[in-house]
Amino acid sequence: MVLLTVFTPAYNRAHTLPRTYKSLCQQDCKDFIWLIVDDGSTDDTKKLVDEWKNRDNGFEIQYIYKENGGMHTAHNTAYENIYTELNVCIDSDDCMALGAVRKIKDEWNRIRDKGYAGIIGLDDDLNTGEIIGKGFPEGLKETTLGEYYAAGGAGDKKLVYRTDVMKKYPPYPVFEGEKYVALSYKYLLCDQEYKLRVLDEVLCDVEYQADGSTNTMWKQYWMNPNGFAFLRKLDMTYPSSRKKIFTACVHYVASNLIAGNKHYIKESPKSFITAIMFPAGWLLYKYIGFKNRNL
Image (cartoon, rainbow, N blue to C red):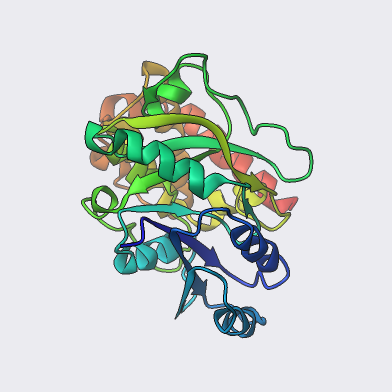
């Protein structure tokens, strides 16, 4: 059986998807399936994929089209259809780093029976080659995402998960009229039960697009308040530090003010702290509104 599924959510990325495809063709280990989840694209994405499927790529290409619902719903669809032991998401504007599949396979063969949820590796900048955020501390062999960031880590990391672990947890929720729920939801749940094996290697070359979620986060806050409130409740339930509780409460207040939810204090896992953080949350709510007026 093939070891790895590389899955790629895509929404109108026909102009960048070819470089993702090229990077997969350049892998020196082809023990993977490429699954493209088309999240309602209206460009030539399907035409491109159909052309690639007719080539002798050395790996299987699977394509699923779904109604546009946002990145998290594309992840739900991917997890419903992945059957390989491992999976990794490579976005439609990114590239799998040279040799990444081989590195993942070799490391997994060494630690498969150690009880890890998967592997955490590095992202670098597609254009400069610089590590995104910070690397791993010297000698670090295992961690959770929460532990890594609580210890001063920074920047996106490439996560390779066991498929059976990801399927243990509920799918990303869908809120009517919203198209964003942070992917960290499943990762945070996983953190409570499993460690990740640290692979101090670059696995993905990334480029943040002007219209991507990272560069439009103020807009995401305003357009998807229920999704963010959902995540803040989880952050309060499983905080990585005391500071994280207060930060989550501030954001939780702001998101619920945007959503118009009058019952948010009663619904909060930390209702007392949420109540006393109302002034800061109200200021954040106003600032998010101000930022959106200027977008």
